Image (cartoon, rainbow, N blue to C red; front, side, top):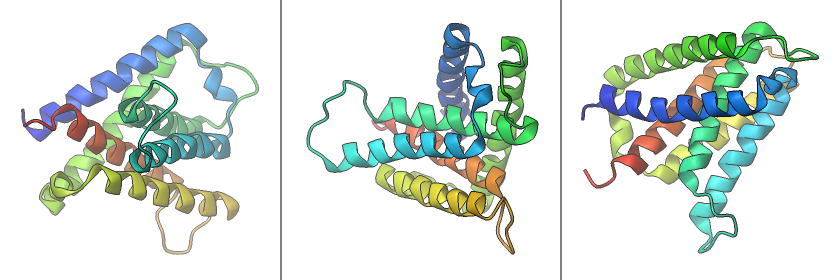
Length: 180
């Protein structure tokens, strides 16, 4: 498989889980403020780092499920930035999936452009580096949130969410295709 096919495959894993959870819970995440989404992504990335450094884990879920969670919460973060948070669930499952597709496509297109310029350098990286980069993006996002979304010269929260999504997708590709 080439990079585009691998991306489409791991995105389909993420989207499938997003739809199943949407069916179970509805768009209950609509009440989450962006800061809470950033913290949720932090929890997932921190758990990955913990699993990477500890010899055992006590919860029977591995790194793969956490990377999927980072992708999906990253997309949710982008949706929340676009719509603002709500006090109630105010969108249908269909609307939520349409917004998911819109934002995952934008993130994927950003990855394709960067991948062209960086010549697939991510393939030579370690999964643990993706984890560290995601954590760095989270701390940057928290700083920007603390600055009320204002930056002097840096990209905004949306660009950081997109980068987190793409690093998590790189991790998923590595995990899915490590034998190749």
